[in-house]
Image 1 (cartoon, rainbow, N blue to C red):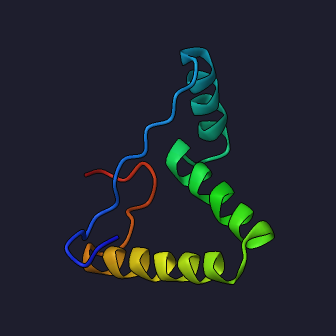
Image 2 (tube, rainbow, N blue to C red; image 1 turned 45 degrees about the vertical axis):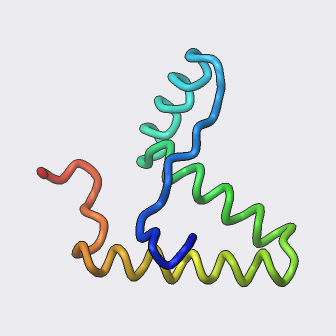
Length: 82
């Protein structure tokens, strides 16, 4: 991300509707959502297969997420009233 870009961008993923729906139900049963579960998988892949640059980028991204969440008061608990 550039210095002017202070938000994460949507990343389109193409898949059949039935797969998307099934994944949503699985994530719900696991107490998470598609985005959280996908980010966890991406983190695990980077940690398992990444080189030094990949790991450094992951660390930078994690700091960015933590900083952004601290400005917003953190991520609300799942199911909390908005």
